[in-house]
Amino acid sequence: MSAFRTVRRSAPRAPARQRGLSLIEVLVSVLVLGMGLLGLAMLQATNLRLAQSSNQRTIATNLASDLLDDIRSNRLLAAQYDGTYTASSVAANTNCAQLNTLTPAQRKTAFTCRMREALGEGATATVTVSANRNVNIVIQWGDAQRWNALAEPTKFQTDSAL
Image (cartoon, rainbow, N blue to C red; front, side, top):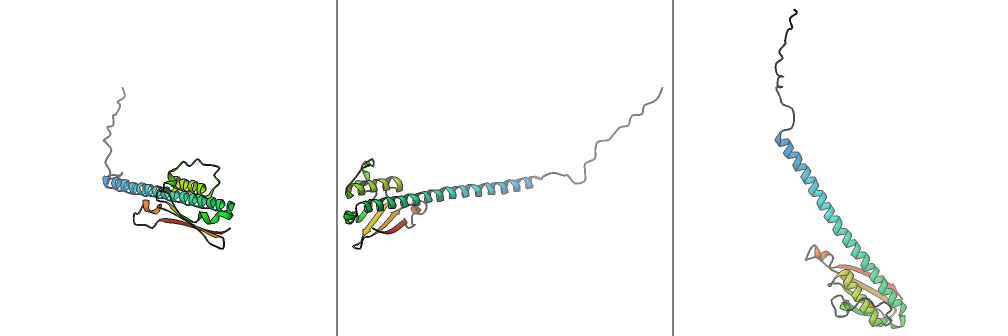
C-alpha cells in the first residue's frame, strides 16, 4: 500500500499592515459627499428663485406693453391714463374677465386686476403722459423683498412716444 502523505496547511498569515478603509476615511468621504449635496441643493434653490424673478420681469414687460397698446389705441384720450395704479385698490379686486373693454377707465381697471394677479398685492404702476405725447410707465413689485425685507422693490420702466 502506498502511503498518502497529508500536508497540513496552516491558516494564511495576516499581513503586517491591514488593507481597506478605516472608519475615519469613511467618515471623511461621507462628509465630503454631504457638503457636495448641500451645495447642489443650494444651487437648485437659487436657480428656482432666479427663474421666478425672471418670469415676473417678463410679466411686467408684457403688462407695460399691453398698457402702451391700450394707450396707443386711444390716443385722443391718452391723458386719461395718467396716474398711479395700485394692485391693492378696489378696482384691482374686480372681475378680470372683462375682455372687450373700450373706455380708459375700464382698461385701467382690467390692467390693475391683471397686475394684481401676476405681480401680487404690493405692485404699483405709475403712468405719465406728457404734453408732447411721450408715455412713461414704471411698474414696481416686491420681488426682491420676498428674500430680503429691506431690499428695494423691483422696478421696470419703459418710455415710448405715441
